[in-house]
Image (cartoon, rainbow, N blue to C red; front, side, top):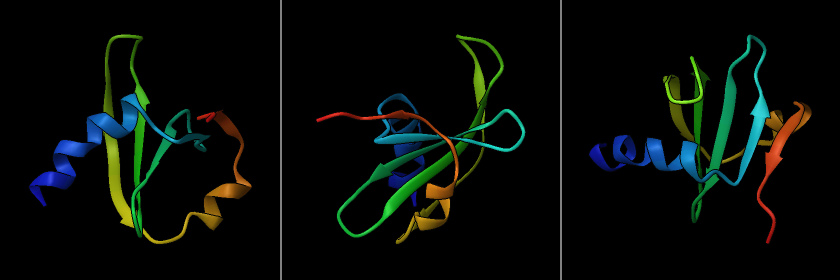
Length: 74
């Protein structure tokens, strides 16, 4: 569990994809071997923000219906 919490800033700073949330929040996703780390967060300013929730999931199909704000290119 500690590893998961320590990974949250990394997901926000270097996500694979960012989706638009419903209430001005962002949904950052970082794919790992067999799962995805999902971090829902809000930016208070360019220098400050906070995590609303975070979780692991095996599928992000439901997120693909949302608007993509940013996507990592290879």
